[in-house]
Image 1 (cartoon, rainbow, N blue to C red):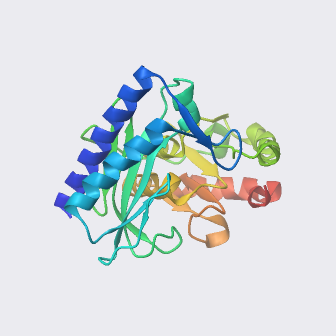
Image 2: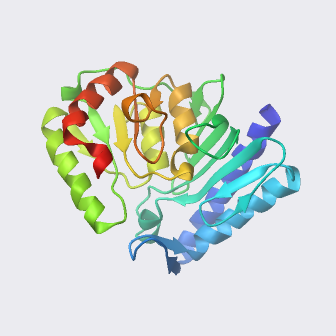
Length: 267
């Protein structure tokens, strides 16, 4: 497993370097996906190809699930879950919060059933590397990290995100409006993998969102768990696109109670 983690980490670091080079050269929008706001750049596709080629050369029997369309059904029981550039809108606007996210999971590529065993999230703009192995703790640039100690919700800095659909964003904003008076403040970074990494290193006390894709959460969730936090879904379910919250355990419980009357899973 250490060799697999080394492969995963090196692929993420090299992919992040490529993404940064392409950002410096100028970004070209290749297409829109679910909406005009949901874009994919030529760099997204090139970075995913780099990662996939690296993995296929070393691990031809493994599965691959990539945001930009790579879907390989493996035979080994392991799947690589890839987000080549998480935070593509930040990338487009040159906001330095976009990341390469890679996780290696056991089982089907379904966040409600898989077991993540290795993960890396690399902020491509800064080069900061967050990583974790199952049972081995979480690190940031080689140093062990821990989630912040649980605090009352009233003094918690909470991250969240919004979907691409305009109507959904309006409903999600209403949830934020209902919560913001009960917490210290709310941050919207624009890259789920970095939101989760920020919980892992204590920069955020908590993070919640509805509508995440498997590649948005796979790596960051393991990093939070290995940093001593919990990553949960709604009402005891596993984290998924339906809902995800990450925090120290006691704070997660308190925030869930505050969110319940706001009905965040209905947005």
